Amino acid sequence: MPTEVPDDRRYTDQHEWALVQGSEGAGTVVRVGITDHAQDALGDIVFVQLPEVGEEVSPGSPMGEVESTKSVSDVYAPVAGVVAAINTALADAPETINADPYGEGWLVEITVTGDDGDPTAGMLDADAYQALVDAS
Image 1 (cartoon, one colour):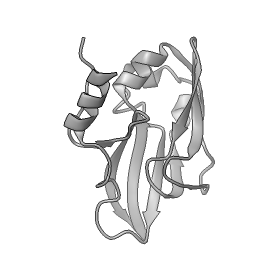
Image 2 (image 1 turned 135 degrees about the vertical axis):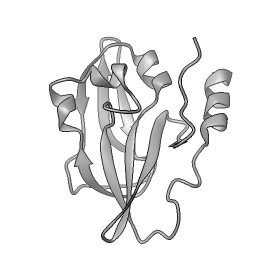
Image 3 (image 1 turned 30 degrees about the vertical axis):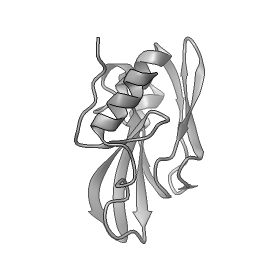
Image 4 (image 1 turned 120 degrees about the vertical axis):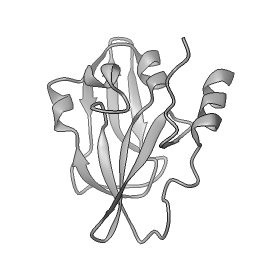
C-alpha cells in the first residue's frame, strides 16, 4: 500500500513534514510532524518526547523522540527557530500519530524568525519525498 504524501507541505529525508501555518508576530509559524511512511515503519507509537515551548531548534538537530513498540527514533527540526507550541494531546494519546500523522498527530510548531519567504522552500516536495520513499 503506497504511503500518503500530501502535496501541501514539504518533507525532509529524515521523514519529517513541515507545513507553513502563516505569519504570527515576528515570524513564520511552521507545523511539524512525522510522515505516514515514518509512523508505518515505527509501528505502534507508545511515547513521544517533545521539546519545551521556547526552546531554540536548528535544522537537522534532534528536537525530540518518538518511541514505538519496535524502536526509538529521533525527530529532527526541519527549520531553525523557536518552539512556539507542542501537541500536548500526544502525552495521553501518542497513538494519534499512527492514526492521523498529517492532522491531529502533529508534533510541534516552530516560529521561524528573520526569514523572508518560505522557510521550507529548500526541503523536498511531495514528489521528491515519494521518490525517496520508493527508493528505500
